[in-house]
Length: 275
Ligand code: DC
Image (tube, rainbow, N blue to C red; front, top):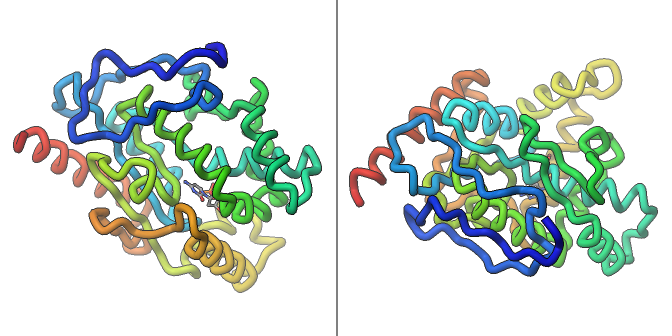
């Protein structure tokens, strides 16, 4: 899609509740995506959007849970952390100093971050090149919390995410602000949580860092990141009032996915039934 195209409203949907769609400037259009109406694995009329938000701190298994939930329900999956990570990778690789926010924002806008929805999970591209291989590196993880505090950049990401929501109206989207800021009218919102120590153990195992990083150190890193994520002015990490909070320490991964699937099916049935 060229940079002059306007966002495409899917013809096959109308809002279940009022899903927030933005009239976005052309530069932030999810440029490669066409509107996709996936078959839903649950009984919802074809024309209803179903946006499911999953927020919460690092190490709660959000990404894996969101991906599996999306697969079970036949929905698309959006990893919004990948967008902030991509911005951090760009900042490092282009050697943009921390005090040159203007340069960072204009470079990220110029990169036209977008996802390749043909891949499963969708891969993220900058300047039309995949950068998935880069965004989980330690240096990116170390900088991304700072990048995510930059208001101008967040506004850009939020607009992009709303365009993606309009183009992929059957979506499980995970991050920190998806239910609170980006999709306040989502059909169902989850907030996954767990003690920092539990999350630190998971992070070490997930990244295979058993030999190099101690539990205490990882715990401190996680607490520091939580603090940065929760205390920023724009889109802080919060549990929305209308979200279902789940303590993931109480379940294994499959248990969390099972629970979310059950709650989602119940909620969607109620929403359809009460219209
Ligand atoms: O979920 P993650 O670890 O990939 O997120 C990377 C960083 O991006 C993390 O510091 C929180 C931030 N983030 C955010 O501020 N808002 C989002 N919607 C998603 C991630």
